Image (cartoon, rainbow, N blue to C red; front, side, top):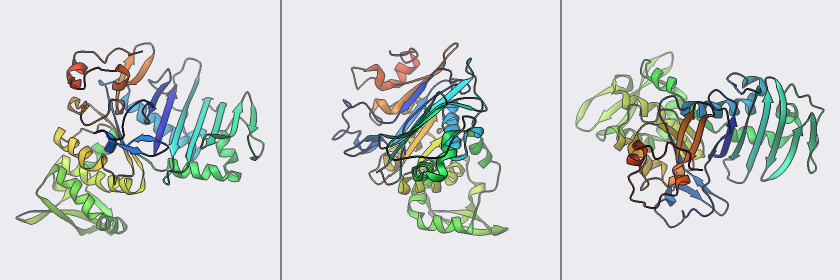
Length: 368
């Protein structure tokens, strides 16, 4: 699961932006109405959910794309992330802190680069630095050592074959799953089919998946599978007191979206993955989203996270979300995309209607 992310030098992100999914130490979570929205352990108060609000063109999607870029760098190397940097000095970089599925290992990886050359890079596990690279010098810490490296490639790719901790980092990063706007649009034009292996997973997770579909249409009672072609199966929807069943591809856009995301959500809930959804509110009403968080995301059984971008101002709800979970994205003509949280404003009254504050421009200026 994601703990922290910062980035600079990618598309509209000129200056460093931060997403910190651990609230400040002084934030009271345990024993409050917010507790179910967090994984509360001796080590962390880690958010189960976070939402990014902002006007069109503010850079919300670019933040998710920067996270994708970071994931590609860790999994595939520096050469996969160079597109999109706009910094005047030609440099870009990110820092990611991520928790593995066991909750025991926290990996931190950072890199600053210009085009195909590494300027700085560091990797640590549970706060202990394994290596750092700066000024063309690689320094190993502790008992670690590795091969000679060159700055034309990221250091991680060069040392991964002899560094077991790199495998742990990559496994943890593989648990970041991205649903972008183009994916959502594509689901509305293609037949909804799944493989035979996927039907088995749907059967295993049947209760969770049907419950998710019921958020959109409460009269749905179940699903079945019909062989389509090339060993692919259509998912068929069953409803109470309606004998006829129909394929998901014939359903409303909201049901098709939920069907496409249901198994992804179910997997994240059980395995501790982080799901990023761009335009979370597309084709879903406010009650669907509110109940998704109340019943599934903010649930003690949920081992994962959901991070989404949205324009639904009714989700600016400090009864449902702790203020640090609500991120505000703005784009300055010079400084580019900026991010801060509702919690940064230290609002005195919990009864304040946050969407009114948003519409009145209270959140337009940086609070610090």
